[in-house]
Length: 138
Image (cartoon, rainbow, N blue to C red; front, side, top):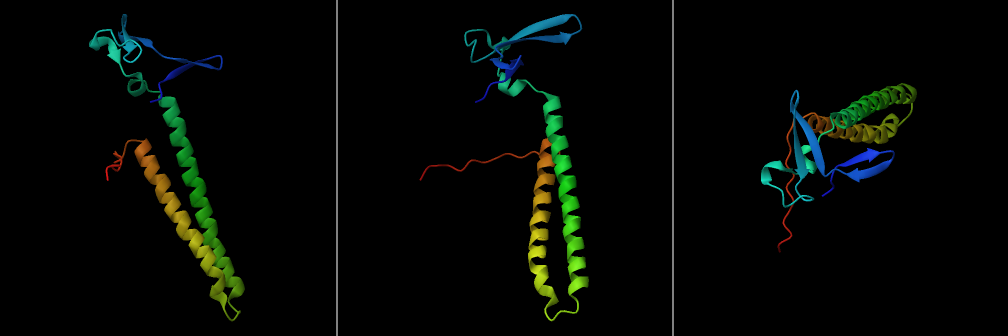
Protein backbone atom coordinates (compact mmCIF):
# COMPACT_ATOMS: atom_id res chain seq x y z
CA UNK A 1 0.00 0.00 0.00
CA UNK A 2 1.23 3.49 -0.73
CA UNK A 3 2.25 5.47 2.30
CA UNK A 4 1.71 9.21 2.61
CA UNK A 5 4.71 11.36 1.87
CA UNK A 6 5.79 14.90 2.65
CA UNK A 7 7.03 16.86 -0.36
CA UNK A 8 9.99 19.06 0.60
CA UNK A 9 11.59 21.01 -2.25
CA UNK A 10 10.37 18.45 -4.78
CA UNK A 11 11.62 15.42 -2.88
CA UNK A 12 9.12 13.05 -1.30
CA UNK A 13 9.86 11.75 2.18
CA UNK A 14 7.94 9.04 4.04
CA UNK A 15 5.98 10.30 7.03
CA UNK A 16 6.96 8.13 10.03
CA UNK A 17 5.77 10.31 12.93
CA UNK A 18 3.40 13.20 13.43
CA UNK A 19 2.89 15.76 16.18
CA UNK A 20 -0.82 16.49 16.60
CA UNK A 21 -2.46 19.34 18.50
CA UNK A 22 -5.20 17.56 20.44
CA UNK A 23 -6.35 20.73 22.22
CA UNK A 24 -4.84 24.21 22.24
CA UNK A 25 -1.48 23.90 23.93
CA UNK A 26 -1.65 20.09 24.18
CA UNK A 27 0.20 17.98 21.63
CA UNK A 28 0.68 14.26 21.23
CA UNK A 29 2.96 12.23 18.97
CA UNK A 30 1.79 9.39 16.76
CA UNK A 31 3.98 6.98 14.81
CA UNK A 32 3.61 4.93 11.66
CA UNK A 33 2.75 1.42 12.81
CA UNK A 34 4.81 -0.29 10.08
CA UNK A 35 7.92 1.80 10.66
CA UNK A 36 7.74 1.83 14.47
CA UNK A 37 6.32 -1.65 15.02
CA UNK A 38 7.67 -2.06 18.58
CA UNK A 39 5.98 1.03 20.05
CA UNK A 40 2.81 0.72 22.16
CA UNK A 41 -0.42 0.29 20.19
CA UNK A 42 -1.96 3.50 21.51
CA UNK A 43 0.61 5.64 19.67
CA UNK A 44 0.80 3.63 16.45
CA UNK A 45 -1.36 4.72 13.50
CA UNK A 46 -1.82 3.63 9.89
CA UNK A 47 -0.93 6.95 8.26
CA UNK A 48 -2.14 5.80 4.85
CA UNK A 49 -5.66 5.71 6.34
CA UNK A 50 -5.40 8.50 8.91
CA UNK A 51 -3.77 11.40 7.04
CA UNK A 52 -6.18 13.47 4.96
CA UNK A 53 -5.63 16.43 2.70
CA UNK A 54 -8.99 18.06 2.05
CA UNK A 55 -7.57 20.48 -0.53
CA UNK A 56 -6.59 17.58 -2.80
CA UNK A 57 -10.07 16.08 -2.49
CA UNK A 58 -11.63 19.47 -3.19
CA UNK A 59 -9.49 19.91 -6.33
CA UNK A 60 -10.66 16.51 -7.56
CA UNK A 61 -14.30 17.41 -6.84
CA UNK A 62 -13.93 20.70 -8.71
CA UNK A 63 -12.43 18.86 -11.72
CA UNK A 64 -15.37 16.45 -11.68
CA UNK A 65 -17.86 19.34 -11.57
CA UNK A 66 -16.08 21.06 -14.47
CA UNK A 67 -16.09 17.83 -16.50
CA UNK A 68 -19.82 17.42 -15.87
CA UNK A 69 -20.48 21.00 -16.99
CA UNK A 70 -18.41 20.58 -20.16
CA UNK A 71 -20.06 17.22 -20.90
CA UNK A 72 -23.54 18.71 -20.51
CA UNK A 73 -22.57 21.58 -22.83
CA UNK A 74 -21.40 19.03 -25.41
CA UNK A 75 -24.66 17.10 -25.02
CA UNK A 76 -26.60 20.29 -25.74
CA UNK A 77 -24.46 20.85 -28.84
CA UNK A 78 -25.26 17.33 -30.05
CA UNK A 79 -28.98 17.89 -29.55
CA UNK A 80 -28.80 21.17 -31.46
CA UNK A 81 -26.91 19.34 -34.19
CA UNK A 82 -29.90 16.99 -34.59
CA UNK A 83 -32.22 19.97 -34.96
CA UNK A 84 -29.91 21.62 -37.51
CA UNK A 85 -29.57 18.38 -39.47
CA UNK A 86 -33.32 17.91 -39.51
CA UNK A 87 -33.91 21.45 -40.76
CA UNK A 88 -31.27 21.10 -43.49
CA UNK A 89 -32.27 17.63 -44.68
CA UNK A 90 -36.06 17.80 -44.43
CA UNK A 91 -36.41 17.91 -48.21
CA UNK A 92 -34.07 14.96 -48.86
CA UNK A 93 -35.46 11.45 -49.58
CA UNK A 94 -33.80 9.88 -46.48
CA UNK A 95 -33.45 12.72 -43.96
CA UNK A 96 -33.11 10.47 -40.91
CA UNK A 97 -29.96 8.70 -42.14
CA UNK A 98 -27.86 11.53 -40.68
CA UNK A 99 -29.43 11.13 -37.23
CA UNK A 100 -28.16 7.68 -36.24
CA UNK A 101 -24.50 8.63 -35.53
CA UNK A 102 -25.58 11.74 -33.62
CA UNK A 103 -28.12 9.78 -31.57
CA UNK A 104 -25.44 7.22 -30.68
CA UNK A 105 -23.14 10.04 -29.53
CA UNK A 106 -25.98 11.46 -27.42
CA UNK A 107 -26.61 8.10 -25.76
CA UNK A 108 -22.91 7.66 -25.01
CA UNK A 109 -22.58 11.19 -23.69
CA UNK A 110 -25.60 10.76 -21.41
CA UNK A 111 -24.08 7.58 -19.94
CA UNK A 112 -20.75 9.35 -19.51
CA UNK A 113 -22.43 12.21 -17.62
CA UNK A 114 -24.24 9.71 -15.37
CA UNK A 115 -20.89 8.10 -14.58
CA UNK A 116 -19.31 11.46 -13.74
CA UNK A 117 -22.26 12.37 -11.52
CA UNK A 118 -21.95 9.05 -9.70
CA UNK A 119 -18.21 9.62 -9.22
CA UNK A 120 -19.01 13.08 -7.82
CA UNK A 121 -21.52 11.55 -5.39
CA UNK A 122 -18.86 9.11 -4.20
CA UNK A 123 -16.20 11.84 -3.91
CA UNK A 124 -18.50 14.10 -1.89
CA UNK A 125 -19.67 11.27 0.38
CA UNK A 126 -23.28 11.24 -0.83
CA UNK A 127 -22.84 7.59 -1.82
CA UNK A 128 -20.76 5.05 0.01
CA UNK A 129 -19.61 2.26 -2.24
CA UNK A 130 -17.84 -0.91 -1.28
CA UNK A 131 -15.98 -2.70 -4.01
CA UNK A 132 -16.18 -6.47 -3.99
CA UNK A 133 -13.20 -8.25 -5.42
CA UNK A 134 -14.16 -11.56 -7.01
CA UNK A 135 -12.53 -14.61 -5.55
CA UNK A 136 -9.79 -16.28 -7.57
CA UNK A 137 -10.69 -19.68 -6.10
CA UNK A 138 -11.79 -22.10 -8.78
